[in-house]
Image 1: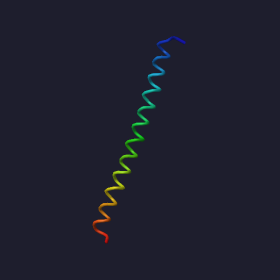
Image 2: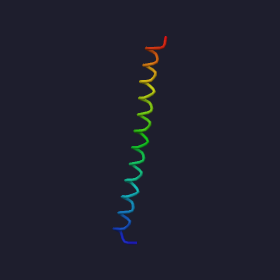
Image 3: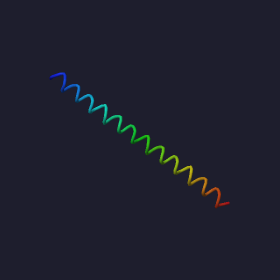
Image 4: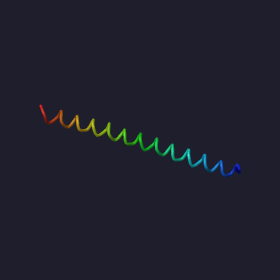
Length: 47
């Protein structure tokens, strides 16, 4: 297999892996932020 083909394959793999990791982190952060906002709102209005 030519080196250039291997290079492009590994670059694609790295890109998709890092994109997935970023997506997962973003989803997790959004979930946490939403939970925090929801908690603070419910604490404020439901006593």
